[in-house]
Length: 222
DNA sequence: GCGACAG
DNA sequence: ATCTTGTCGC
Image 1: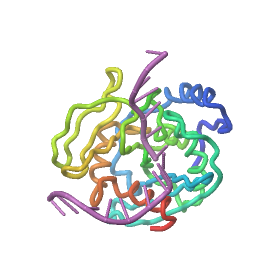
Image 2 (image 1 turned 135 degrees about the horizontal axis):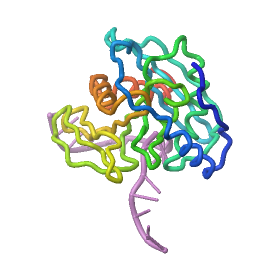
Image 3 (image 1 turned 90 degrees about the vertical axis):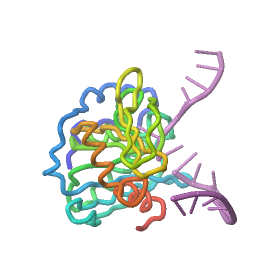
C-alpha cells in the first residue's frame, strides 16, 4: 500500500489541526463497488500506560466472515489524546501494523469517526486518504452532531447532523442496544457505510471486523 | 466565558 | 482508552 499524502507525525496540536484542514478536501464520497469488496479489515488501537498496541483483523466477506489475516504492532505513545486529533495518536501505530499484512484489504473499518468530526476529518478519513482506499468509521459514542430518537429494532437509523450537515448515521445494529455511529472515511457514500456496518454486525453490537480488532488489541489474541 | 469532548 | 465485580435482563 502506498501513502498518497505523507506528512510529518511529530507535530504540535496546532499543526495537526492545520494538516486536517489541508487534507479534508481530499476526502471523496463516491459509490462503493460492492462487487469488488472481498476483504474488510477491522482496526483498533489500545493504550496501556505509555505503550500503544495497534491490531488489524482481515475478514473475507464472501466466506462467512472468515478471518484470513491479522497483525499487531506495539510501540511508545507518540501523541496525547486530544478530542478531534485522535488520528495523530493512532495512525503512527496502525501504519507499521498494516505493513505486516499479506495483502491490502479492500475496505478499512475504524473504531472511530470519519466525517462526523469538527473538521470533517476523523481517523477513518485520515487513514482512507493516506492509503487512497475505501474506509469508514464505526464509533461507539458521538464526537459531534445530534440525531432524532431511534426505534428499538435492529436496523433502525437516523441521520447524525452537525451544523446543519448530515455527517453520519446513528445505527442500531442490535435490538434494544445502544446504537453505533457510522460515517464515511473515504471513497464510499454514507449509505454504503451504513449497509456495510449493518451487514457485518452479525453477533455483537459492533461489526465483526472492529469487534475482533478490539479484542486483538486489548487481549493480544483472538 | 461555559460546556462538550472519537479513543 | 483504562481502572475493575457483580448483577440485571433477554
